[in-house]
Length: 363
Ligand SMILES: [Zn+2]
Image 1 (cartoon, helix red, strand yellow):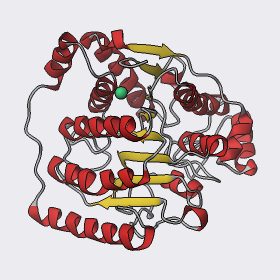
Image 2 (tube, helix red, strand yellow):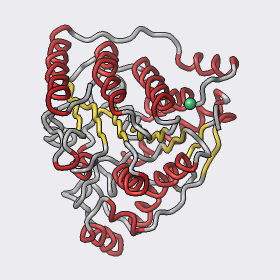
Image 3 (cartoon, helix red, strand yellow):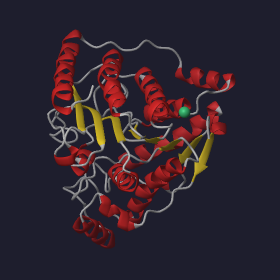
Protein backbone atom coordinates (compact mmCIF):
# COMPACT_ATOMS: atom_id res chain seq x y z
CA UNK A 1 0.00 0.00 0.00
CA UNK A 2 2.08 2.97 -1.20
CA UNK A 3 2.22 5.93 1.17
CA UNK A 4 0.88 3.92 4.08
CA UNK A 5 2.92 2.09 6.68
CA UNK A 6 1.87 -0.77 8.94
CA UNK A 7 2.75 -0.10 12.57
CA UNK A 8 2.88 -3.28 14.64
CA UNK A 9 1.87 -2.16 18.09
CA UNK A 10 -0.68 -2.64 20.85
CA UNK A 11 -0.97 -2.00 24.57
CA UNK A 12 0.56 -5.32 25.48
CA UNK A 13 3.61 -4.95 23.22
CA UNK A 14 4.39 -1.46 24.52
CA UNK A 15 4.22 -2.69 28.13
CA UNK A 16 6.98 -5.27 27.62
CA UNK A 17 10.57 -4.60 28.62
CA UNK A 18 13.01 -7.00 30.22
CA UNK A 19 15.00 -4.22 31.86
CA UNK A 20 14.79 -3.66 35.63
CA UNK A 21 13.03 -0.66 37.12
CA UNK A 22 13.41 2.30 36.70
CA UNK A 23 14.90 1.70 33.26
CA UNK A 24 11.86 -0.36 32.30
CA UNK A 25 9.46 2.57 32.65
CA UNK A 26 11.87 4.83 30.77
CA UNK A 27 11.93 2.43 27.83
CA UNK A 28 8.16 2.05 27.84
CA UNK A 29 7.79 5.83 27.77
CA UNK A 30 9.29 5.85 24.26
CA UNK A 31 6.16 4.23 22.82
CA UNK A 32 3.85 6.65 24.60
CA UNK A 33 5.75 9.65 23.22
CA UNK A 34 5.76 8.10 19.73
CA UNK A 35 1.97 7.77 19.85
CA UNK A 36 1.60 11.37 21.06
CA UNK A 37 3.84 12.62 18.24
CA UNK A 38 1.90 10.62 15.65
CA UNK A 39 -1.28 12.32 16.88
CA UNK A 40 0.26 15.76 17.12
CA UNK A 41 1.68 15.70 13.58
CA UNK A 42 -1.39 13.90 12.16
CA UNK A 43 1.01 11.31 10.71
CA UNK A 44 -1.31 8.83 12.42
CA UNK A 45 -3.59 9.26 9.39
CA UNK A 46 -1.01 7.49 7.22
CA UNK A 47 -0.35 4.63 9.62
CA UNK A 48 -2.34 1.41 9.90
CA UNK A 49 -2.17 -0.30 13.27
CA UNK A 50 -1.58 -4.02 13.28
CA UNK A 51 -1.92 -6.24 16.34
CA UNK A 52 1.02 -8.62 16.84
CA UNK A 53 0.42 -12.35 16.71
CA UNK A 54 1.94 -14.48 19.46
CA UNK A 55 4.83 -16.57 18.16
CA UNK A 56 4.73 -20.34 18.40
CA UNK A 57 7.62 -21.39 20.64
CA UNK A 58 8.87 -23.82 17.97
CA UNK A 59 10.10 -20.84 16.00
CA UNK A 60 12.55 -19.90 18.77
CA UNK A 61 14.64 -22.91 17.70
CA UNK A 62 15.59 -21.07 14.52
CA UNK A 63 18.03 -19.06 16.61
CA UNK A 64 18.30 -20.58 20.09
CA UNK A 65 19.35 -23.86 21.63
CA UNK A 66 16.55 -25.95 23.10
CA UNK A 67 18.32 -25.96 26.49
CA UNK A 68 18.23 -22.17 26.60
CA UNK A 69 14.54 -22.06 25.64
CA UNK A 70 13.84 -24.57 28.44
CA UNK A 71 15.92 -22.48 30.84
CA UNK A 72 13.80 -19.40 30.16
CA UNK A 73 10.62 -21.48 30.59
CA UNK A 74 11.92 -22.78 33.91
CA UNK A 75 12.95 -19.28 35.05
CA UNK A 76 9.46 -18.10 34.11
CA UNK A 77 7.92 -20.79 36.33
CA UNK A 78 10.16 -19.90 39.28
CA UNK A 79 9.58 -16.17 38.86
CA UNK A 80 12.54 -14.79 40.85
CA UNK A 81 16.25 -14.14 40.28
CA UNK A 82 18.00 -13.19 37.08
CA UNK A 83 18.40 -14.89 33.73
CA UNK A 84 21.99 -13.63 33.54
CA UNK A 85 24.61 -12.33 35.97
CA UNK A 86 22.28 -9.89 37.67
CA UNK A 87 21.21 -7.72 34.76
CA UNK A 88 17.88 -9.08 33.53
CA UNK A 89 15.34 -9.88 36.26
CA UNK A 90 13.07 -12.91 36.00
CA UNK A 91 9.32 -12.49 36.39
CA UNK A 92 6.34 -14.74 35.89
CA UNK A 93 5.04 -14.22 32.39
CA UNK A 94 8.41 -13.31 30.88
CA UNK A 95 8.35 -16.35 28.58
CA UNK A 96 4.93 -15.39 27.22
CA UNK A 97 6.13 -11.78 26.86
CA UNK A 98 9.19 -13.01 24.97
CA UNK A 99 6.95 -14.90 22.58
CA UNK A 100 4.95 -11.72 22.07
CA UNK A 101 8.10 -9.76 21.18
CA UNK A 102 9.18 -12.39 18.66
CA UNK A 103 5.59 -12.63 17.39
CA UNK A 104 5.49 -8.88 16.70
CA UNK A 105 8.58 -9.05 14.50
CA UNK A 106 7.32 -12.19 12.76
CA UNK A 107 4.01 -10.37 12.15
CA UNK A 108 5.97 -7.48 10.64
CA UNK A 109 7.76 -9.98 8.40
CA UNK A 110 4.59 -11.67 7.17
CA UNK A 111 2.92 -8.35 6.35
CA UNK A 112 5.80 -7.38 4.08
CA UNK A 113 6.19 -10.84 2.55
CA UNK A 114 2.46 -10.99 1.77
CA UNK A 115 2.84 -7.76 -0.21
CA UNK A 116 0.04 -6.09 1.72
CA UNK A 117 2.42 -3.32 2.77
CA UNK A 118 5.87 -2.43 1.48
CA UNK A 119 7.01 -1.00 4.78
CA UNK A 120 6.31 -2.00 8.34
CA UNK A 121 7.57 -0.68 11.65
CA UNK A 122 7.72 -2.51 14.96
CA UNK A 123 9.10 -0.17 17.65
CA UNK A 124 9.57 -2.96 20.22
CA UNK A 125 11.65 -5.09 17.85
CA UNK A 126 15.38 -5.46 17.31
CA UNK A 127 16.41 -7.43 20.42
CA UNK A 128 19.73 -8.08 18.75
CA UNK A 129 21.86 -8.74 21.85
CA UNK A 130 20.15 -12.06 22.68
CA UNK A 131 22.48 -14.94 21.85
CA UNK A 132 22.13 -18.61 20.95
CA UNK A 133 22.52 -19.74 24.55
CA UNK A 134 21.98 -16.69 26.71
CA UNK A 135 20.15 -13.45 27.34
CA UNK A 136 22.09 -10.21 27.09
CA UNK A 137 21.41 -6.50 27.61
CA UNK A 138 17.76 -7.16 28.54
CA UNK A 139 17.17 -9.13 25.32
CA UNK A 140 15.79 -12.65 25.82
CA UNK A 141 15.21 -14.02 22.31
CA UNK A 142 16.70 -12.56 19.15
CA UNK A 143 13.69 -11.61 17.01
CA UNK A 144 15.94 -10.28 14.23
CA UNK A 145 17.85 -13.54 13.81
CA UNK A 146 14.67 -15.62 14.10
CA UNK A 147 12.97 -13.60 11.35
CA UNK A 148 16.02 -13.62 9.08
CA UNK A 149 16.56 -17.38 9.48
CA UNK A 150 12.89 -18.09 8.80
CA UNK A 151 12.81 -15.91 5.70
CA UNK A 152 16.03 -17.43 4.38
CA UNK A 153 14.80 -20.96 4.95
CA UNK A 154 11.50 -20.26 3.18
CA UNK A 155 12.53 -17.99 0.30
CA UNK A 156 16.35 -18.19 -0.02
CA UNK A 157 16.33 -14.43 -0.50
CA UNK A 158 19.34 -12.15 -0.30
CA UNK A 159 18.56 -10.71 3.13
CA UNK A 160 20.18 -7.60 4.57
CA UNK A 161 20.15 -6.81 8.29
CA UNK A 162 21.30 -3.25 8.79
CA UNK A 163 21.70 -2.16 12.42
CA UNK A 164 22.49 1.50 13.12
CA UNK A 165 21.60 1.40 16.84
CA UNK A 166 25.16 2.30 17.87
CA UNK A 167 25.65 -0.80 20.02
CA UNK A 168 27.13 -3.88 18.38
CA UNK A 169 24.47 -6.34 17.15
CA UNK A 170 26.48 -9.04 18.91
CA UNK A 171 23.71 -11.63 19.29
CA UNK A 172 22.68 -11.34 15.65
CA UNK A 173 26.31 -11.72 14.61
CA UNK A 174 26.84 -14.77 16.82
CA UNK A 175 23.67 -16.59 15.72
CA UNK A 176 24.01 -15.83 12.00
CA UNK A 177 27.81 -15.93 11.74
CA UNK A 178 27.78 -18.93 9.38
CA UNK A 179 24.67 -17.93 7.44
CA UNK A 180 24.73 -16.21 4.04
CA UNK A 181 22.60 -13.37 5.37
CA UNK A 182 24.32 -9.99 5.08
CA UNK A 183 24.72 -8.32 8.46
CA UNK A 184 25.98 -4.76 8.76
CA UNK A 185 26.37 -3.30 12.23
CA UNK A 186 27.51 0.29 12.74
CA UNK A 187 28.48 0.71 16.37
CA UNK A 188 30.80 2.25 18.88
CA UNK A 189 33.63 -0.11 19.59
CA UNK A 190 34.61 -0.59 23.19
CA UNK A 191 34.70 -3.13 25.92
CA UNK A 192 32.14 -1.56 28.21
CA UNK A 193 28.84 -1.65 26.36
CA UNK A 194 27.77 -4.66 24.37
CA UNK A 195 30.54 -7.18 23.97
CA UNK A 196 34.24 -7.10 23.34
CA UNK A 197 33.44 -8.29 19.85
CA UNK A 198 32.46 -6.10 16.96
CA UNK A 199 35.83 -5.64 15.20
CA UNK A 200 35.90 -5.24 11.42
CA UNK A 201 38.00 -8.38 11.06
CA UNK A 202 35.02 -10.51 12.21
CA UNK A 203 33.71 -11.28 8.73
CA UNK A 204 31.73 -14.50 9.19
CA UNK A 205 32.69 -18.07 8.47
CA UNK A 206 31.57 -21.12 6.48
CA UNK A 207 28.64 -20.22 4.25
CA UNK A 208 28.52 -16.89 6.04
CA UNK A 209 32.09 -15.91 5.11
CA UNK A 210 32.03 -12.32 3.91
CA UNK A 211 28.48 -11.78 5.16
CA UNK A 212 29.35 -10.12 8.49
CA UNK A 213 30.38 -6.50 8.27
CA UNK A 214 31.21 -4.60 11.43
CA UNK A 215 31.80 -0.89 11.29
CA UNK A 216 33.22 0.00 14.72
CA UNK A 217 33.50 3.75 15.24
CA UNK A 218 35.06 5.78 18.08
CA UNK A 219 33.37 8.09 20.60
CA UNK A 220 32.13 11.55 19.68
CA UNK A 221 31.63 11.17 15.95
CA UNK A 222 29.32 13.80 14.46
CA UNK A 223 26.74 13.82 11.68
CA UNK A 224 29.32 14.60 8.98
CA UNK A 225 31.31 11.48 9.78
CA UNK A 226 28.31 9.17 10.22
CA UNK A 227 26.83 10.19 6.87
CA UNK A 228 30.20 9.76 5.13
CA UNK A 229 30.55 6.25 6.56
CA UNK A 230 27.06 5.44 5.35
CA UNK A 231 27.53 6.89 1.85
CA UNK A 232 31.01 5.60 1.18
CA UNK A 233 30.88 2.26 2.88
CA UNK A 234 27.35 1.03 3.52
CA UNK A 235 25.64 2.16 0.32
CA UNK A 236 28.18 0.56 -2.10
CA UNK A 237 28.02 -2.70 -0.13
CA UNK A 238 24.22 -2.75 -0.26
CA UNK A 239 24.27 -1.87 -3.96
CA UNK A 240 26.63 -4.76 -4.70
CA UNK A 241 24.58 -7.16 -2.60
CA UNK A 242 21.18 -6.13 -4.04
CA UNK A 243 19.09 -7.29 -1.07
CA UNK A 244 15.66 -8.75 -1.78
CA UNK A 245 14.44 -7.71 1.65
CA UNK A 246 15.85 -5.29 4.23
CA UNK A 247 15.58 -5.62 7.99
CA UNK A 248 16.51 -2.21 9.31
CA UNK A 249 17.21 -1.89 13.05
CA UNK A 250 16.69 1.85 13.46
CA UNK A 251 17.91 2.31 17.03
CA UNK A 252 18.63 5.85 18.14
CA UNK A 253 21.38 5.18 20.69
CA UNK A 254 23.87 7.42 18.88
CA UNK A 255 21.77 10.55 19.34
CA UNK A 256 23.73 13.23 21.20
CA UNK A 257 21.01 13.29 23.89
CA UNK A 258 21.18 9.56 24.47
CA UNK A 259 23.42 8.13 27.20
CA UNK A 260 24.13 4.78 25.49
CA UNK A 261 26.73 5.35 22.82
CA UNK A 262 28.51 8.68 23.25
CA UNK A 263 28.16 9.87 19.68
CA UNK A 264 27.21 13.43 18.75
CA UNK A 265 24.52 12.64 16.20
CA UNK A 266 21.43 14.74 15.66
CA UNK A 267 18.21 13.91 13.85
CA UNK A 268 20.04 15.06 10.70
CA UNK A 269 21.82 11.69 10.55
CA UNK A 270 18.77 9.60 11.33
CA UNK A 271 16.51 11.43 8.87
CA UNK A 272 19.11 11.15 6.11
CA UNK A 273 19.82 7.51 6.74
CA UNK A 274 16.13 6.61 6.87
CA UNK A 275 15.77 8.33 3.48
CA UNK A 276 18.69 6.39 1.99
CA UNK A 277 17.46 3.04 3.35
CA UNK A 278 13.97 3.80 2.06
CA UNK A 279 15.40 4.55 -1.41
CA UNK A 280 17.53 1.39 -1.37
CA UNK A 281 14.47 -0.70 -0.50
CA UNK A 282 12.62 0.56 -3.57
CA UNK A 283 15.67 0.26 -5.81
CA UNK A 284 16.58 -3.34 -4.92
CA UNK A 285 14.01 -4.98 -2.66
CA UNK A 286 10.69 -4.17 -4.36
CA UNK A 287 10.12 -1.88 -1.37
CA UNK A 288 10.30 -4.74 1.15
CA UNK A 289 11.49 -2.99 4.30
CA UNK A 290 10.98 -4.18 7.86
CA UNK A 291 11.94 -1.53 10.33
CA UNK A 292 12.57 -2.37 14.01
CA UNK A 293 12.95 0.07 16.90
CA UNK A 294 16.24 -1.19 18.37
CA UNK A 295 18.12 0.64 21.13
CA UNK A 296 17.70 4.13 22.53
CA UNK A 297 17.54 5.07 26.21
CA UNK A 298 16.43 8.67 25.95
CA UNK A 299 12.66 8.34 25.56
CA UNK A 300 12.22 11.67 23.82
CA UNK A 301 15.04 11.53 21.25
CA UNK A 302 14.32 7.87 20.52
CA UNK A 303 10.62 8.49 19.88
CA UNK A 304 11.44 11.53 17.74
CA UNK A 305 13.92 9.53 15.66
CA UNK A 306 11.34 6.79 15.16
CA UNK A 307 8.74 9.38 14.15
CA UNK A 308 11.03 10.78 11.45
CA UNK A 309 11.81 7.27 10.25
CA UNK A 310 8.08 6.52 10.01
CA UNK A 311 7.46 9.83 8.24
CA UNK A 312 10.12 8.91 5.68
CA UNK A 313 8.51 5.52 5.04
CA UNK A 314 5.13 7.22 4.45
CA UNK A 315 6.56 9.52 1.76
CA UNK A 316 5.48 11.15 -0.44
CA UNK A 317 3.51 13.08 2.17
CA UNK A 318 0.85 15.72 1.51
CA UNK A 319 2.16 19.26 2.01
CA UNK A 320 0.30 19.76 5.27
CA UNK A 321 1.77 16.63 6.87
CA UNK A 322 5.23 17.50 5.60
CA UNK A 323 4.91 20.91 7.27
CA UNK A 324 3.79 19.33 10.55
CA UNK A 325 6.84 17.06 10.56
CA UNK A 326 9.22 19.89 9.62
CA UNK A 327 7.79 22.01 12.44
CA UNK A 328 8.78 19.31 14.94
CA UNK A 329 12.23 18.77 13.40
CA UNK A 330 13.05 22.45 13.72
CA UNK A 331 16.35 23.72 12.32
CA UNK A 332 19.90 22.91 13.26
CA UNK A 333 23.26 22.40 11.69
CA UNK A 334 24.73 18.91 11.33
CA UNK A 335 27.38 18.31 13.99
CA UNK A 336 31.00 18.16 12.89
CA UNK A 337 33.59 15.65 14.04
CA UNK A 338 36.89 16.56 15.66
CA UNK A 339 39.66 16.13 12.98
CA UNK A 340 41.63 13.65 15.11
CA UNK A 341 38.56 11.41 15.48
CA UNK A 342 37.73 11.82 11.79
CA UNK A 343 41.23 10.63 10.95
CA UNK A 344 40.66 7.46 12.99
CA UNK A 345 37.35 6.83 11.22
CA UNK A 346 38.93 7.27 7.77
CA UNK A 347 41.61 4.74 8.74
CA UNK A 348 38.90 2.26 9.78
CA UNK A 349 37.00 2.91 6.55
CA UNK A 350 40.08 2.20 4.41
CA UNK A 351 40.69 -1.03 6.33
CA UNK A 352 37.10 -2.18 5.85
CA UNK A 353 37.04 -1.19 2.16
CA UNK A 354 40.20 -3.18 1.50
CA UNK A 355 38.81 -6.16 3.33
CA UNK A 356 35.57 -5.98 1.38
CA UNK A 357 37.23 -5.63 -2.02
CA UNK A 358 40.07 -8.09 -1.58
CA UNK A 359 38.54 -10.80 0.54
CA UNK A 360 34.78 -10.56 0.34
CA UNK A 361 34.39 -9.38 -3.24
CA UNK A 362 31.86 -6.59 -2.54
CA UNK A 363 32.08 -2.90 -3.28
ZN1 LIG B 1 8.28 3.60 0.14
